[in-house]
Picture 1 (cartoon, rainbow, N blue to C red):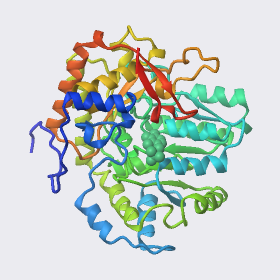
Picture 2 (cartoon, rainbow, N blue to C red):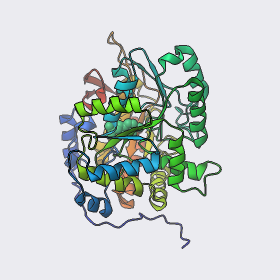
Picture 3 (cartoon, protein in one colour):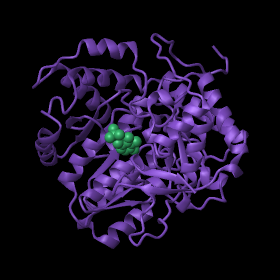
Picture 4 (cartoon, helix red, strand yellow):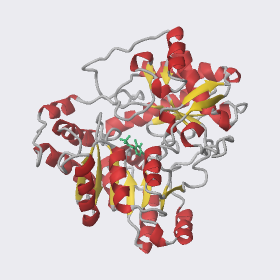
Length: 459
Ligand SMILES: *Cc1c(COP(=O)(O)O)cnc(C)c1O
């Protein structure tokens, strides 16, 4: 068949109602939530693009798997099915289930990272950064030049700057670099992919210095699709073969299975180092649970074992990446500046370019996110100075983040074309009224991960 329309490669089996709160209700909700979109209730949101994490629809095969869930405390059958799926894709010796990605990070960094260390990453995700810093170490972002410039179009804009990796190791000393991490795709840098060549180069540097190399693998399947469609030599490989090669360069990975695990909850730490794995399992027992369930139910492990295979289906990945690109093209044509090219799981609106009259310490991306919700009930998330800016200890303006973005993350297999068309209409309307949007100030904040709970006031 040779038609151009790429359809959702599934039909709907169960539906869930969406509430349609009016403008007055949305304004009241903003007031109550202190202009923090994390404080909204689900029934106050029309289209929820806050995150693609755990918000996807599971397939009938996953639900069927859940009925097979084995709730045996130690040695559950579901664990072995989960372990087999993870090992099939990653090839790692040890598979440690966790309740989500950040638990895997906390355990890995507790085992591997000490006070004063430096962990290089293309760009740390917020929980990854917080978990590195919690150990007293520095989380250093070394994405390639252009990787933080929204307008630069590159096929693999998430690549690590390998020169900067060498410089970092030389500067801080190899003994202070406990591991190198690459995030695929680069979520905080715009959902941008990392090339196979870049993974290979990072591996070579790590081999030269004897440093372990880990992937933050949350969107490994989307990254594999970009390699297939953009990197020479991979057009005829399957997403599974590409994923296997990606993991073959690493010594381990942390994973949030709420992303490319197609699950509503779950994650894992997988690695080859037996000593670290033993210590990680000891910590797991302390906070997550016995090593064959790690904070998950047997039925969760079963759903993930199926999801990890479904996510590598070519029809799914083609539709997934195209539907994100379609939203990006539509809003860009309608006057909204975005990070180019669009990433895999989300469209990132460039608030700094849209709102040059709002300085970073008045949170332009937060202002844009608030207006998208107020105008159309569309919830995105600020990835700018509220999330990543540094507070001035003397009460001066925050040190600004590298970019001022609003991420519209697309839940997997959840919304249809008309939902996406509605979102585009709201975004284009707000872009046309950019000069009406003003700045905000923070009136209440927590010492870390402040974006989850801060309250803001319009200036
Ligand atoms: C979501 C995410 C995490 C953390 O995973 P959780 O399941 O939310 O704890 C870590 N890294 C990246 C790149 C992510 O997108």
